[in-house]
Amino acid sequence: MVSDPGTRRPMRIADRQRVAEDVVVLDLAPVDGTALPDWEPGAHVDLEIAPGLERQYSLVTTTADGHWRVAVLRESEGRGGSTAVHDTLRIGHEVVVGGPRNHFGFDPGRPAVFVAGGIGITPIAAMIEAAEAAGTPWELHYAGRSRDRMAFAAELVAAYGDRVRLAVADEGGRLDVAALLAEPRDAVTYCCGPRRLMDAVEQAAAHWPAGSVRVERFEAAEGVDAPGAAFEVELALSGTTVTVPADRTLLEVVEDAGVFVLSSCREGTCGTCETPVLEGRIDHRDTVLSPAEQADDRTMMICVSRARGDCPRIVLEL
Image 1: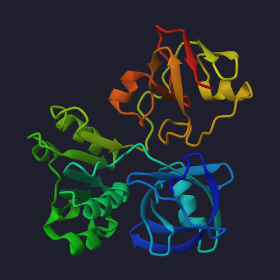
Image 2 (image 1 turned 90 degrees about the horizontal axis):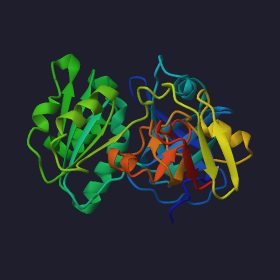
Image 3 (image 1 turned 30 degrees about the vertical axis):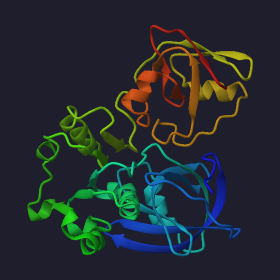
């Protein structure tokens, strides 16, 4: 059974553990006791921590008890979601969980080079579990500031030995991405972590065949708030045409027109508001779609993306 990505369900915190410095693991169980649906490695859920406070977290695994597990890093310089998780959520608390949805798909049919930085190990851990089950050759390169801040590092090393290579900064370790990816291989590189790491991986593997690098970003793209021109949008299913001013988002205008669209992050990182494009060219400002998907202009994240400056009118399947 696979869930509709738009599904939202009440869940409770069944377990909570500290697994590294400033990292807690939450096990999420359905309030009604029903079995949770299957999900694919790389998937994330929307966690409503409190009314109006919702964040996205990658799934680590489904536990032996059938619960979904997520890991959350306290980010003191963040927007408050992770701090609220650490300071307020305890065993027995109820939350609303949306999804799962996945824009970071894993291909078990090709060897995998996993590159993780810090809490970016979360979706990678799920992929390693799937690779083992499928017999997919893999290797992991995991970078962090110190061992006590690297969630799951000890467990991974104990389970998989030298297939797990740690680069621990305070021990003099350094992950040389350029050297790692210098020679193209018959493999897919999967990367999640700080923006600078993912940028470095994409740059280092730019000469690899198309589709050989996949990254998972939970930070808004640079320039997401850059000025844009006004444009017109035909909502094909609603029979409505609206104008999006230069200082407002398409999502805001559509909502004002009374058209319901699922949304969560509102900064182009979660994929919840992905909408089919029937006509027009798009100024993509999300971090969800791959460069090839953005070039196709078949869908857009209407919370941040707009019509291109040379295309004053688009048609959406809304």
